[in-house]
Image (cartoon, rainbow, N blue to C red; front, side, top):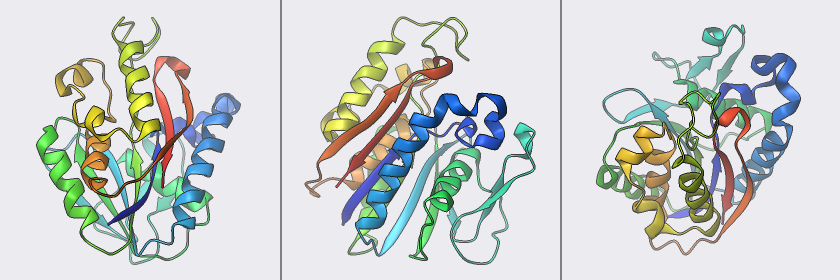
Length: 235
């Protein structure tokens, strides 16, 4: 059963070495992420899953010890997902950011696994995946990585789209309120058009939280660089 969840954005810019001279601009987001991951540790889970979006065609698992890095962003920095032998496949960027957050939080050695979720995965498959994760142990926690829209300003990666701000506002409300119905109802096609990579992981969370009775709290919501970043904690 799901006992806790942390929702965090997944831009590599969260890593100060990647952000370089702009590192201070995301300090509030990093602090909120630290608060959320701290609540995960306090829940004392039997198993932790880090769920993040990928550009692959199917759901993928990454065992404890899997390694990722930020060389593609010009930084010679590697991260490891928990303890264990290095996996054969590198972590996708979203899970690498998650591993960095856990390392920053000095996460202990509870069983951990990474779950890569295709950004275009249909909602029903997302929620089914969440149910499977929640049923895998008595006490399950999720670190859910994913961004909101990338169309909030003219300089945003997806340029300005007037639908982006309302989309992010409703996503932030739903995540802050642990509103499972609203998360399941997120329009996958609209999310794709707005380049909102968090849609599928958020719907995995909605599936995992069914019958768990968790309450949510919104810790951060902003759109630096024209991208919606949301941090929430469920317990």
